[in-house]
Length: 379
Image 1 (cartoon, rainbow, N blue to C red):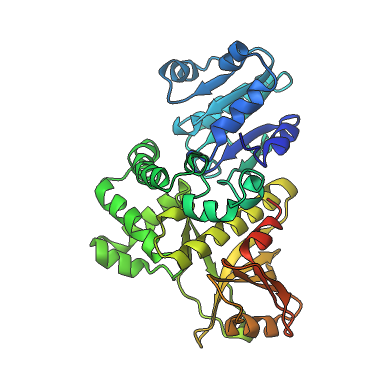
Image 2: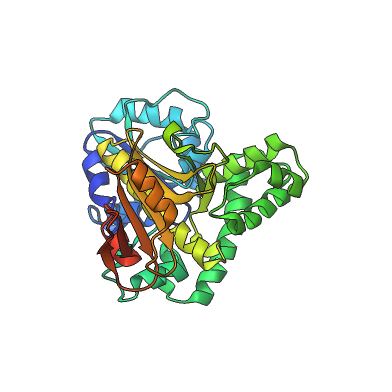
């Protein structure tokens, strides 16, 4: 069992408000919630305090508006699939907030699916649980970085230790998400075309995502493909990052780039490594935002001279970190050198997937290996 990085924060926040934990399906939300329950209650008691929307008896109880829970912790899993889930939770919280602690988990953006019911503003903390990162698995195996790159960050395929099982899991996972989660949450008439889009996207990781090109490929309206990409974001299949621009660097304003939460779907090794780093940086950003209120954003840089740097981390809208990814080699990226020259006070790091290296160049740019860099992140 790998200890998850949000457990202490969840327990802390439950003492004040309801806690909503969202994130990709099978990232470990249910396991984490049940671990917290088992740490406080006997097995039989834990079972009474866990409700899953996909269970018919639990669903009927919620439909009836019942709340026969003894004082203490109660967990609602996937309740956001209920159109009036917020109204139900608001009534429960307002009536019994002094005696109940409420934990809600969901495999979609709980800040988006607010269908029906009154607002819960001020009644909950929202935390986002990402798949496993290097800091979480360093103690589990010596080749933790290589295993993450090959098997992905979702607990089941990572813990299997098998590349074959990881590939099988990824294919089945994508199909389940598209055919089950989307059917529960969205109205999509051409599900087969959306699935075709989902299969196409991993090959486009690392490049600006042209919705016009996708529209032509799928033979659908621009508005349709834009909505489908937004749906994939809402159910935590992908996330997009936008260009970082400033007049002084003649940045171009092009399309966003996208990355997969399951980076094993990305076949190109270099793009997969870039995707892994993107997920780690986004995980740290979300963690700092959700637990400390620090405004973080992940972007990328490209200018009219086609200079490009993979990642720019912003804090309160100001750049604080530039990151360039390389599969191997020590040659410094000219684009990273250029961007750092424009913002000399900003940390700049070139991360390499191969070798054991940690040096500082004459330009003040750090070149280091991925295991070292990733293990230094907050989560």
